[in-house]
Amino acid sequence: MLWFSESLQRAVDQAQLTLDAVLLKTRYWQRWATLPLNERQVKVLNRLLDGFDGKLTNSKWAAIAKCSPDTALRDINDLLARGVLSKTGAGGVVPAMSLRTAECPVK
Image (cartoon, rainbow, N blue to C red):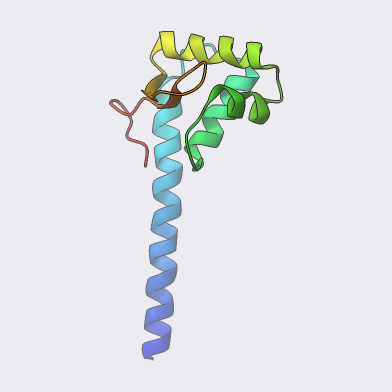
């Protein structure tokens, strides 16, 4: 009975974590629903929302989006100007970025 109870609790905890992640992503996209974004921007933002490890840089953006560094820089600058991304520190040509967390906290 104890094993069953502990297994059930682990399942409920995992379900709660999954639900929290889905709700977070939903709230984030609702917040930016009216903002026109290109496919590369959507792809990288979804990657960030799904739990990107490390800091997002221009070169990482280019690798994820499979685009040139110049295109990545244009995408990044566009999102920085619109307030979707924020600078988090010094980096090469472009500082590392993170999702804007004021309106929609991201873990």
